[in-house]
Image (cartoon, rainbow, N blue to C red; front, top):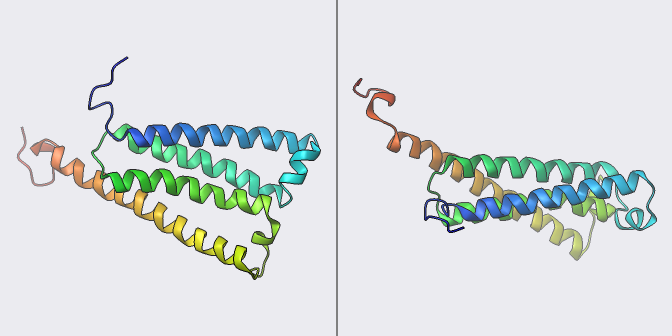
Length: 159
């Protein structure tokens, strides 16, 4: 089936949403395995189980946000599209890393190169996600005023 150029608008978003939905499903099965006491999963997810639940929910939330923005069919700059997709993975993976590495979830920040890398990754992920989703929200809001009929815009002429 051939796609039109309109259907390919923001294609990165729909592909990213599909990937993150699959990640959420995989984490759901990991949670089932943990609750059934699968030793290999207990060894992999040595941290708090709630962090795995948070990763699962965050992947679902990011998927829903991306699908909603994709459904608007508003033209978005490529940097916004990629920031949303990569930022969505980054934010969700922060919880996943805490579920795997309990030292990243300690009350006091851990010392060392890995802890520093985790803090830098956290800052970069939150910044990228904010840029992507915030920029998309502003772009969509502005787009609605440009593409709306004159009668639907405040101060426009009634038809």
